[in-house]
Image 1 (tube, each protein chain N blue to C red):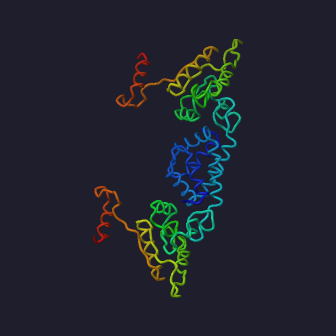
Image 2 (image 1 turned 45 degrees about the vertical axis):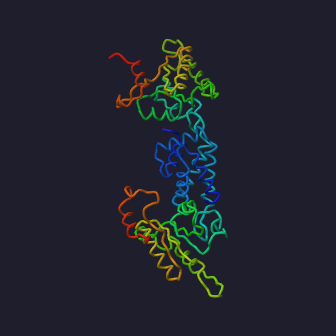
Image 3 (image 1 turned 180 degrees about the vertical axis):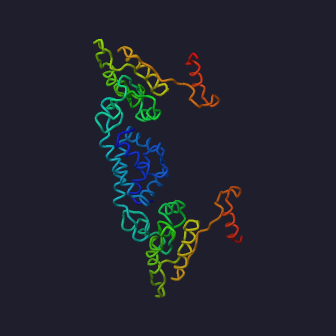
Length: 207
Length: 207
């Protein structure tokens, strides 16, 4: 119904998550009718990001730098490493604001059924990190990473990935922990699903 | 929190209608993590559309052609002209499927308070269209446009624009009509607002 270039634009906008045919049409009309500057800016931002954004060589998060700002920040605790599935998880933890160590981003989880093995989620890179040593005051060598905190999602694949990583870390003499799962703070028991409640009972702590 | 290029991309995505900070972040992560091809395609579609899409010189709808496919279609009734506010309105009427005339797109409505006058919504171009003459069988001149159908939105500004256009068209001897407003087909009276119901009573037709 629209001219070919407009149809192309509507089709391209539909690749965005959560955007259906109606929203895509509305977006295309808005950009072409009301805000061509914004459309041009979006085009160049996309182009720039696609060309230049890669992965941090230390933690694998998305960045256009060789080493990301977090890994380069000397005021953070470089002996703590938190393993997460996605860069968005890093943001969520940073916004909570009480963790000051470093991160390691898997970009997924182990999923043999989809052909995702350890190398696909960077466990070879993680292995090298865990193997890094430093000398302590007495001159003895100890691992650079004092504690590995696993914060993969509490799904079947996330749990399997956590177990797999934990075994490897323990074999290298690095302490491993998993973030707590249970009833969210401020959540009401009445509205919590059975799986979470069961986990909360099994993982109860002594008062 | 993210690297500068990613922050730029998230900010640029927020210019899309209906996209807030969380959705923009989700879109940026999705494009960079899962579908860089789609991101590149979106960038080039935007670039192309911004550069090339202009307005049809006959009906002012958005198109990259000099004259749009609808105006160029000789199988449509060129003696009927429907005036709408936006290109999306053209699509809505085309999807309904029972109108086979041409369109004229205002790209807005008269709004003196925002400084939008007749020339801003193309009423000079519409005036020329209404002034076009052709010879009929008897050799007498008659207007090319037999009927002007006004389909601006039933808002205060849309009604004012409709009245303004109707007066100009009548002055040129062109018949003018306004699409009907009332209770939507399939709508339930119980859920129709008072303004629409009052209009439906005032515009009742003889059975």
